[in-house]
Structure formats: C-alpha cells, structure tokens
Length: 184
Image (cartoon, rainbow, N blue to C red; front, side):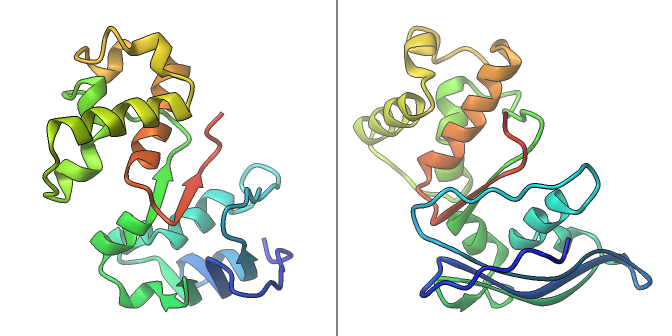
C-alpha cells in the first residue's frame, strides 16, 4: 500500500512517508503520503490484506499498544505532529469505528453514545446529554428505531444497528476526523 499520494493545501490530516512493520523485516505498509481534506469523505480501497486497517490504526496510534510494531514517517492533524500528542487528546480529535460493532456491553444505548464524554471526565447537563444523544442517533438514522429503548443495552440491537450506534458514539464527541474501518 504505497500508491496513495494526494497533495492538497491545508489538509486536516497529512500523512508523510508512513511505513508500518509488524517486525523489523516485514512491512505491511510502505511510504504512504496523503493529504485528507476537511469535511470530505475519503475512501482507501484495496484488496484484503493490503494494509488499509493497519494504516487506519497507525493514524489513531492504536499500534502504540504493541511494542514490536515499527512505525516510520509522520502524521499531522491540523498541522500538529500526532506522535507528540497524548493518545487521550489524539483520540478526542480522531474518532475510530472498527470493522466489527463494539458497543460497550454494560452500557445502555444512551450511555454508549455519551461514552467519550464519560471516559474523558467531561460533565454535561442532562439537557446537553439528551441533545447529543438525539442528534448523534439521528445522524446515523437510528433515533426513530431506538428512541423508546434508550436505556436498553447496546448489545440488544441488531448487528447493523450496533454499528450505527458505534458511529453515533464517534460522532457525538465531534472529532476533527473519523476513521471508519469497513463500517458497512
């Protein structure tokens, strides 16, 4: 996955010569350069196993959890080097929705949408919470399906509904970028 090259002015996300190896001798992604525009949908397409998910996880620094993974190159978010940001701050600014739905199993639908706020210790008034939950669920066309079941567990939903709940959870925190790893 080294053919992704895009030059744009003032990208929200700027990837510079990014390479990712699962060990020193085996690169999964090599030399990716890309500028991602603000308020645009950008798709990264390729065959299974070509490094799309690996690239997304590197952007959000999910690979920091694994000491053997080697990452070379730079990722800038709004001009800031993401390697210099705390992962907590970075993940506030770059949301992620994974390939498989992963609602928090002990939380209600309502609390799943607000999880980013709770996990970051951000207190909101009840009216603010209600507004965020409704707006986020409407944005993913889930509101009408769940508005009478908000206190049920997120795992109560079908697989497709769970995925839309996870997208609503990412949207609720209003990040600068949302990474979607095959969310459909």
